[in-house]
Length: 205
Image 1 (cartoon, rainbow, N blue to C red):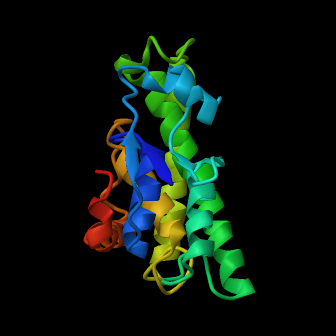
Image 2: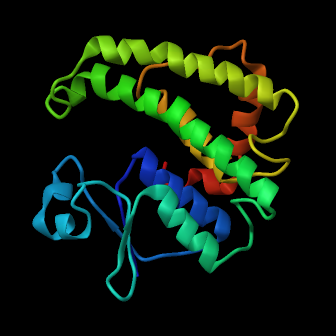
Image 3: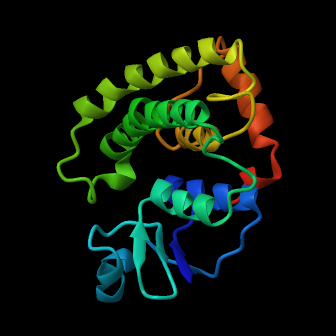
């Protein structure tokens, strides 16, 4: 088994954070995106979509996408549970995880890819208007999160889950996208400090 990752990338960080919470160690191979190693023929045979992370099982099966990899390890080692234990919990975790992916992480990525000068040659065409249009979407979801966190220690349940991993990775990536978390969102700030203090949060940073 081998896990293909890259440094300082949000999707690989999700997996690294998740594995650290589980206490699982997997042999890793780091793919240098700056050197375009994700475009190399050997890597493309693992994932034609040219993205990390990728988990390669002992039989050669390749699993791409961060959440799919996390689900594999959740099934392989159910404890500690991070996707919800009961049907109701699983539904709530899935709901908040998907909302954090679609309404927070994606707008942050769009702002980053379409506004950051370093991405000008890789994001063709770089549409600055689209990047700017996504900033209010990020702030709108953060306000929604703040309301939720005013009455809950964590995002989906009364304990830490994969939804919190997805959300904190997105919030931390806002720095690269040059979007600040409003100081008025005190509940987000409290949650962010508590989640960031977890030992596993240092994985992939």
